[in-house]
Image (cartoon, rainbow, N blue to C red; front, side):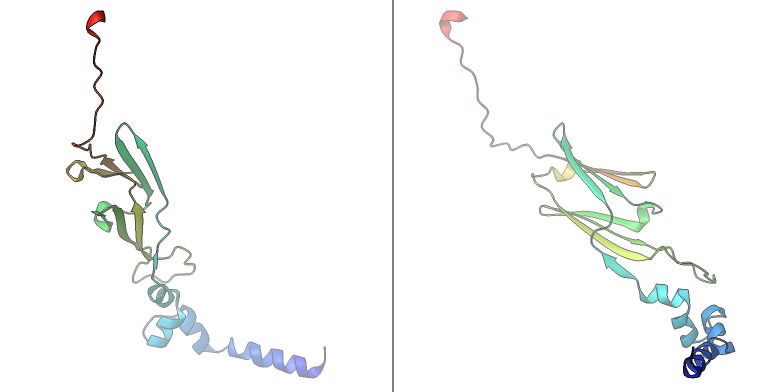
Length: 161
């Protein structure tokens, strides 16, 4: 390796040897610069909205539509469910960030999520039920029975009565 490349390498490594660099990365979060360099600052800046979360299943059985959504680590106060026309809306906040901790690894993002599912049939809005069990949100949507629906009535033949 020639001498110029060694000089560049030494100059590059020198910036990582300064106390300011390491204080900004792992030191106390007392300044805006430190917050931007820290995991905590990155976490707070990167909160975004996810539209593909939570993962859901939707199926029909016995005159009801069932929706199951994976939301591990959340409780019912973190989630809002609403029905707007023919759309089921599941909104919430996943926050894995904890204040006053010095993170060494931060892979689980905090996120605000909103999932919209188009419901293919009319729903009896007064009969909707929900539950949250072991990180799965269960939503039961009873299908509205059309009162104007034509129901065929068989006419018996008098001869065979």
